[in-house]
Image 1 (cartoon, rainbow, N blue to C red):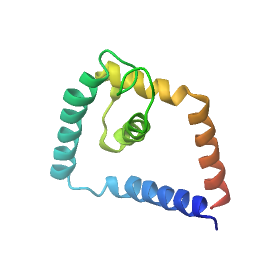
Image 2: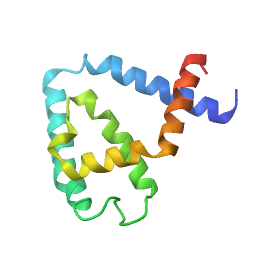
Image 3: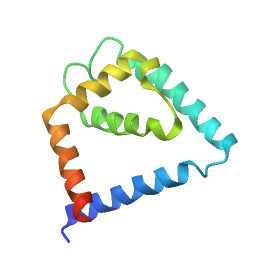
Image 4: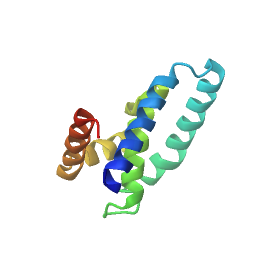
Length: 115
């Protein structure tokens, strides 16, 4: 197994574990996590993306890629990005990129092959 395959496999297992355990999180903790995430997104990220498509202006950076991944995890906590238009636009823009689609296809293929 190559290093890349190992890293991707580890990440997939982490995401699967997070999905399967999210229903086991006590409601009080789940609620506090949701409020914390909502506050952070609403005040920090929405403000940062208010006038720009990307966090650092006109050019996409690693911070934008990481934010895209974090936004993808919002479903675990029942957070709908529609309440934050700039954040939702940012997430949709990165999701629409051909490189993002290629990465999703590669991940699905690795999952199918159990790599």
